[in-house]
Image 1 (tube, protein in one colour):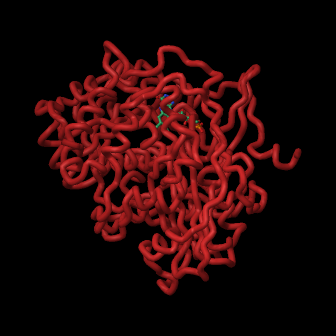
Image 2 (cartoon, helix red, strand yellow):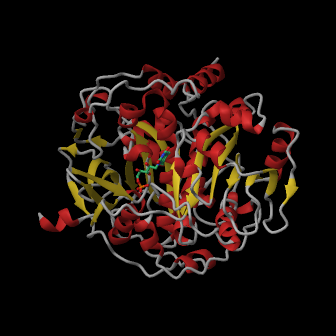
Length: 531
Ligand SMILES: Cc1cc2nc3c(=O)[nH]c(=O)nc-3n(C[C@H](O)[C@H](O)[C@H](O)COP(=O)(O)O)c2cc1C
C-alpha cells in the first residue's frame, strides 16, 4: 500500500513535455515565506563572528587526514557557518537576496539546522536552533541532567511550505535534495576541523521530531511546521571514550524543558499542496532502519589529481551555481574531468564517508566538450552492483565501451547530444552549454521494497553527490549547477528504461561559467557589524 502511494506521488510529480507537475498558477512574491526562521522567547547564545579563515587547503583536505581540533564554541560556530551560513548577498536593481554555503532549489532554503549539546563546556546541555541571519544559537530546550556521555549532534529539518510555495507538488523532492546537499555541506565543513560526520539512523522520525521539539504543534504556526530529516553525530575525538548512545540522549530529552515559539514566516498560504503532507507522512522514517554498511569498509578511494592550494573554507564560501556557461570555452582538460567524477566514488573521504548505505545512485553523462572524449552519452556506475543492474536495464543497443582513460566510465552512444540534454532538462541551456551534464539514476524499486522511507534517502544521496560535484567543480576552476527541473520519463525513454527499477532523480551540469556583471555581490555578514 505505502509503496504504491510513493509510486503514485513520484509519478504525479513528473514533468512531461506536455505539462509540468502541479504548481501555483501565479507566484505572489508577497507570499514568499521568510527564509530565516526565528524562535522568539529563547535565550540567545552567541557564536564568534563569521569569516574566520583556517588555512587547510583543498589539496591538504584531499591528501591528508587533518588532526581533530578541539570542540569549542569558535570551532562549532565555524562549522555551522560553513555548512548552513550565509556566503554573500546579491543585488540586482531593487532586488536583494542572500546566498548560503549550502545550495537550495530556487534559493528557497527549506532547511533548519539544530545542535544538541551534551557537554556544558561548549554550550549548556540542551537543544539549539541555528539562526542563519544572525549567526547565533537560540536555546530551544534545557535538560536538567549533568553532562551526558556522547558527542555533539547536528540535526536538520525542512519547512516544506518554503519550497512548495514556488514549486507546488514536486517541492517535496527538492526538500530532500536540499537535505542531501546540507549533509554534504556539513561534512565538508566538519572535515576542515578534522571532525567526522556520521549519519545516525537508529532513531525514527517520531523520535527525532520529539528530540528537536518539532512535535510541539502549539509552538509553530499552522502549515509552517518542520518535518525532521536527519541526525548526525559529530565525531571530534580520536578514541571512543565519549561514545554514548542516541537512545540515552533520547531518554534524557524526554525531560527537556522547552522554550520559545517559531515566528510566522509571514506567508499567507494561498495554496495548500495536500499531497506533500501525505507523502511526508507515508515516507516517515520508522525505528530500526538497517544501516550496517560502513563506508570505511567500502570500495577503494581513488587518488585525486587536483593540487589546488586555495583554502577549503574559501572554496566553500565561493561556491556558486552557474547561471550561464561559455559556449565557446576550450574543452575541459581530461585530468580535471576525471578528478571530478572520480570524487563521486571516493567513499572513504568526506563527505561520502558520512553515508551509511551502499551506493544506489549512478551517473549517466552527456559529454559535450571534454578533451579526449568523443561527445555522447556515457555511464558511470558507482558500484559493481550498479554496473550489473544498469547493463541489464538500459537500452540493449548501447555500446558499453569501457573508456581506457577513465576508470569505470562507459560510452553508451556517441553523437552530439547537446540539444537532447537541453530539452530533457526543461530546455535549460545550462545542460547543453557546459562541458558535460549528467543525470543520477537511482536503484529505485529495490530501495522502496526494503522500506518506503528510502524514497527520501535516495534523494539525499543524489543531493550528497551533487554537493561533491559543486565543490569539485569549484576546486577545478569550473562551476556546477544542480538541476531539479527535467522531464522524467523522457529521460527514461532516452536510456531505454521501461519500468521503475531505475529512475532519474536529479541532474547536474559543469562547465566554464559566465559571470553576470549586472549582479552586485556584497559581503555575507556585514549586517552584523553595522548594527
Ligand atoms: C535541488 C536543486 C535543484 C536545482 N535546480 C535548478 C534548476 O533546475 N535550474 C537552475 O538554474 N538552477 C537550479 N538549482 C540551483 C539553485 O537555483 C541555486 O542553488 C540557488 O539559487 C542558490 O544559489 P547558489 O547555489 O549559487 O548558492 C538547483 C539547486 C538545487 C540544490
